[in-house]
Image (cartoon, rainbow, N blue to C red; front, side):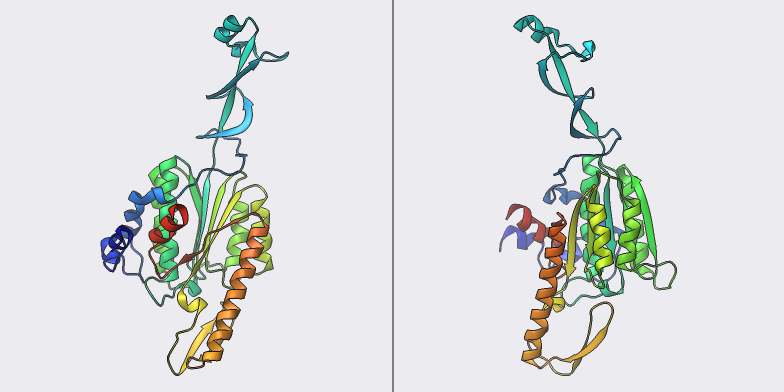
Length: 316
């Protein structure tokens, strides 16, 4: 058995304190030791005006030395590098790279369509586990964490906060929304994206965790607007039954796309093929739309520990 299978084998749920259907604080805290499977290094210029831990592409006076060049008219005489000037006989000045802040926003969908799992975990629980892993990595890098956790019954809008306080506050929102059954102030995915659009600051890193059920052109428009000034990663959370019906069985099964529910006969092989083709086409079209916006696409299955999947994606 490989080291990966030994670590995340049949006893993995017990190891991290999870049931797969409910959500507790212990299993979210467990991910703190596994932040190395993610890489949140910025891949686009940081646009925030606030000081932080990242080096911007713009040069000027700041905290981090960048390079030395010949003195030019208008340069601040306080930045003259006297050692290089004395050695070369020509006046040189120091350039610095400004430090910028990059908040991270996570949108986590825990709606009714996510409350389902046929193998290892509910999709909602897998989304929460992925959010926990991202949150701990954000804390490790010293970034601020914010975002939106929502279902049709309840939602929490979280402005960016740093250190453990931001992480634990996000975890509280995850467990609260996952266990809420009474209708209060809920959202669907498209409404949540609209709200996230107003919350996100330019220059941020944005993660969208959802099965994208009920996703419309309106939601795509909001992602396009968010992507104009931010780095966006979309993480579609899927269950095996979202992509393929069981190979054998009899009777009727209810299938929902988040808006409409229909019933199919499980014993029909031709229907299984049509269903698989339909779902594959939908996933491909969604991926194409997201990629055309310049967003990253990171699919995650609820049938396998998220750490195993990310280790293969980043290091496999």
